[in-house]
Image (tube, rainbow, N blue to C red; front, side, top):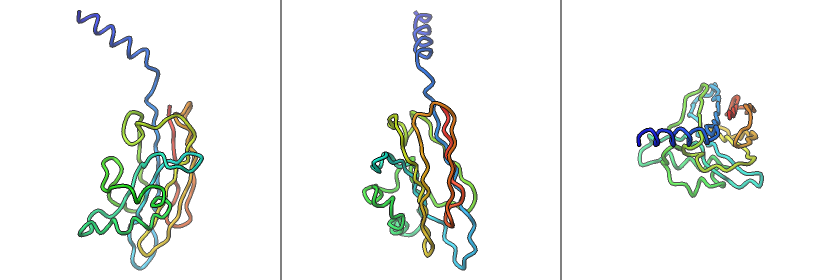
Length: 171
């Protein structure tokens, strides 16, 4: 009896094609020489070709401000705000987290795990938007074909608020 269960499990695993695709994003936050530096708020999401938002990937904001005051500045992420940010309840597990210091930050998402667990096959645009209190705002857009059939890399760069942004796809 045990042997037949193990055999069924082995057959099920063998019949399942490699479904462990991965989407990895590196975001560089540059160090700015300004009098009063505030860490940037950053939102990252995927859109379809018709610009409809598909999924939120990350929202970094100041979660330590008293009385949830960090949410007040989320509106400065203008495109994200219009694309669904205003309808999102924060904090949200697997999506929101604290702002980050200048440097390179890597986020990795795998199939079967939130927030890309329900992502259907298709062509998307990855948007990374940054806004800083008393600073500027900018958006970097990168193409994403999901699920990836081969390893691919795309990169872009902001002018001031964002440094290099790289998306890597692995089948």
